Each structure stands twice: as C-alpha cells, then as structure tokens.
Image 1 (tube, rainbow, N blue to C red):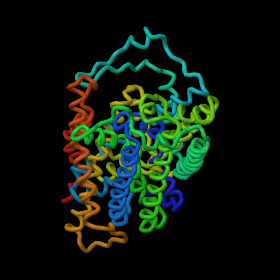
Image 2: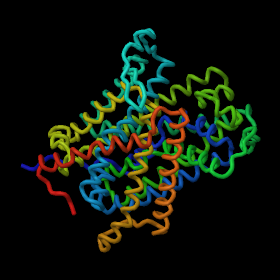
Image 3: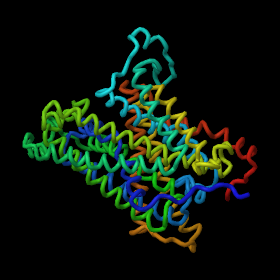
Length: 479
C-alpha cells in the first residue's frame, strides 16, 4: 500500500497571495519608526526600502531557479541539501524550528494580540504577581512569563487555532491566507490613499532631513545597515512559496511568476506606506512614535480612525500567522522525510493529506516562544539567521551550476552571475555590519544580548543531535 502524498492544490493566484501574505505582516506597522530613528533622512530611508526590496528580488530570482529545478516541498531545506549535503540542510532545519520560523510566528501573533486589545479586554495580573516569576538567562536577559498574560493567551489561541486548521485541511489553511491577504492588501491601499489625499500633511516632509542630521562615513553606513535590518524584517517571508513547491500546480511556471509579482507588489506597497507616514509627520516625529501607523492616520483622518488601523493590523497579522504556519511546517516535514528529524514528524495524515505532525510541532514551539515574551530579541535573531541561510541558498545557485551543469533549469536567473554575486556581496556586508552593530550596542549597555551571535549559538546547539538522527533513522548523508 502506497504512502499518502501531499496534493497539488495551490494555483497561481493562491501562490502569489502566499508571497504577499507571507511578506506583509506586522513589521510595516512598527519598523518604519525605528528605521527613522536609525536613518533620519526621508530620501535615504526610501532608498533603504527600494534597495532592500531589490536585493530580496535578486534572492527570489535565485530561489526561483532552484525551485524550478527541485519543485519539492521543503524549499530551501531541499536546496541546501542538494548543494551542500545533509549536515548544512539539517542546521537550517534546526534553526528554522529553534528560532527562525517559530520566532517569526510568535512575534507576529504577539502583535496581533496587542492590537486586538482595541476590541477585546486583555486581562493582566497585578505587577507583584507578574514579577513574581523571573527566568534569568546569563548574557540574554530576564524573562517574565506572567507579564501580559491576557495578550499572550490571545496570541497562543491564534496560533493553536490556525494550527488546527492547517492540521485538518491544506485547502482551508490556504483559503484563510488567500482571503486575509486580499483583505489586507485592499485595506493597506485604503490606508495609504486615505492619508495621502487627506490634505492634512506636507510634501516637504518627503525631502527634509531631521534637524541635526549629519551622518557621514562609518556612522552613515552603520545607520543605513541598521535601517536595512528593519526593511529586511518587513520583506522577510518571500521564501515561503518555495517551501510548498511540491503542492503547487504547474510549479515550473508558477514559482517564478508568483515570486516576482508578489515581491513587486510588496515593494510598491511598502514605499507608499512609508510615504504616507512621512506626509503627515516629519521624520524626527516618526522616530518618536510608538505606533506610527495609528499616529499617522489619526493626524490625517481624526482619532476615530485608530480603530480602523487596529482592525487592519489584526487582519494583517492573523493572515501572516496562518501563512507562516502553513509554509514553514513543510521544512519540518522535509527534515523528517530525509532522516534528519523524528520520523513521525514527516508523516502525511492518512485522512486529511496534511503534514499534520509537523504543523503541531511548529504551533506548540511558537506558542512557547510567545510565553517567553522576548519579542525584540527573537525578532532580531530570526532576521539575522534567515539572511545567513538566504546567503547560502543564493550561493547554492553557483554551486549547482558547477555541480549539475546539465540538469534541466526551466528558469535561469537573469543577469547570472552578477545578480547572485550582488546579493551575496550585499548580504555578507549586512551580516558583518549587523554583528558589529549588535556588539557595539551590547558593549554600550543598549542591549542585554548580542542578538545575532545568540541566534548562531542556538543554531549550533543542534549540532550534537545530528549524529543521533542519522544513526536512529539509518539514512546516509548525501554527498
């Protein structure tokens, strides 16, 4: 009797919405303010969005070449395995479970719960109870699991509810992300044009730097790359489509078309949103705003509009949690299927034809990270580690051109080898400058942990388990 297989149920428009839904999540409603503080120059800040978007596009082109070569569920896990063997692929899979994908899901769900507080009362313990349990991690910081218990419970409910949906039905999980993505995109455009055509702002804000802005040399580079971290965080998720390649209809055509169209939409939307924020507040005021989207629309349309923004963010983040659970469970599934994780995690449900056990693993661990409440640390870690592995995947395009020169390639990267080389050079510089920035912040007492190095430590923590999985499940590493 043959084993059940995942069905090809995802068409072009659903695939495109998967890209858009995976990218546009919570960060665009929060990160622009932080980025404005790091780089208080409107023209430079807009250039960060454009450059980060183009670099992401270059990465997507590389992913498209590998995705059409290997249209298998698992995405970059599969590509790393083909290019470098099981060990590097395993490290990525471990990192995705330990921090990258689960931290992203937890962070997005936390923002969803935060803004749901506009509509639902979020109970809290009194301060004495909240601070009664403290988990101290040396060189990382203190975790208070009882703080904001109502918000955390709501976030966990969102994650586990969507976990159950994706456990029982691929079609239902895909439908949720499709509908939420369409609503989110329409709502974002309404937000943008509502602000830009309100008449309550000034076009001068698009060109006027913050008073006292005079970054130069290393200070300017550091500020630019720090702002790029926020942009990369906002663009992160464009790789989700490749993780479900084995469930795409006509993957050889739809991977490329959906990636390029989806990312193009995201670039345009992000630039327009940032322009709308700038229109109603100078960049130095943007930098001081805790809820920049709410503040912007209140200035444009009045205090009552804040409720609309809150609803928009809840819809956006709910859809982003769904799409990340839907796509990232496939990495766990591929790890187990290849003998690099517990075998039961790679089982297809005999009735529902879903990677059910893999979905549960992602949902449960993401929920535990919500309880930790360490939103900022987790966000910085998953972005750094994501781009570390993006670098390896794009490098794999060059490796596979040498390793398998005659393999069919339904899509080839335009501008090869310059497109992947530009991506590799920029991302390498970004990773090095991020470590420098994190170390500087740690030494200056502005951060309790060197976030990028902590992400690397969590990833390397999985190394001792690799021989166990190889012995336990008896599969030889690929050469």
